[in-house]
Length: 482
Image 1 (cartoon, rainbow, N blue to C red):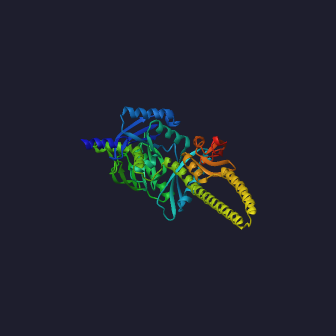
Image 2 (cartoon, one colour):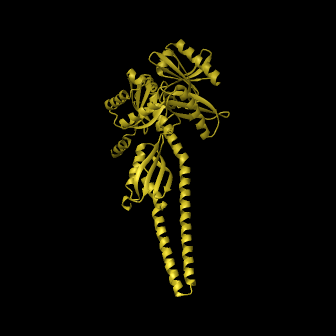
Image 3 (cartoon, helix red, strand yellow):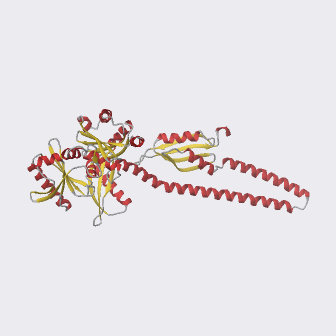
């Protein structure tokens, strides 16, 4: 009993709710990564406004209603699988190159599409094993506003958003065909959809009427186009049980026209299962066909399979920018520290040499008067130099303490790139993700007793990477010292 209770507690908030879209139809599946099982599956027709214009309010209300009515209290994570109508997909064949150069080449291809479409978007891509020196790449681009809307829905629902991917990639993940060549047949409301996958990437789409003659003709056309464009002969065909009922095909080898295909009925594999194991085989396959895209998205997130994930793309971009600037920032701080230590050491050596010279002059004087006069002169000079040193020390910045203070004061999302001293005035140059991060940094400096008159002198507009530049003007010493 205790073991069962502990097991149930460990599962709390671990189940994944995957929302997949197919036109105006929303498919929702609850997947348990621990049991690798589909716990529940639901379908709902959305209003036209939600599907066409992506109304965030309607979508959020529908998901909230689904969570409440289905009593999904163990769901803590969220996955979105988008239809191809919302995503730009393109198969690229690039020469094999290092990862950094490949990223630049893919970004150049994406910029070409965004410039022609006059849109703002975010991208992700995945690579597949190279062949004959060429690297297959699947490029996906989605509108920036759509991604921001889905992220906001996840935050409002208090669910951890794991993945935002695209329907054909999720379907290939469910079928465990992420690097295979095959054709997928799906029954829609009034037609049958055929999708050709090359290396696990969707490349061609066709729709036809729900008749045996129409499906066979569309399959033959798709096979010929794939062979002409990609020099690949399609042999494996995956189809739902409902499509099999329409065509009358049998699982296994089938002769269709002048082509021979091996037909696979879509079903739950060894890596996934339907919790309702009491279902008949036909019923189980029907559920597998319905929840294929939703469960495939959950598998991509839970098992971290290779595929499209726009969230990963965005975090990777920020990480890449940070990695680029960090070596330069570290080297600059190290050089400033070494130079400061060298200056301090040279000043100490100089002062010691001057004091030793004065002592030798005093000892060389022959008479008391000369010694007295010399002593007065030396004392006066020492006082003058001490006053000068005191003034210099007052203006001098102790960089060790200063850098330590900066390290404690700089908040997340904000960093320094340059520190400049002009007497008691100090200018800080840096970058921040947004204005609030820079204002938090200023507030931390104002509370320190080492600075006064801390002001934000200048900000500059954001660049393509979304980072703003700022300049802070302040004086050393607290307000009491002035």
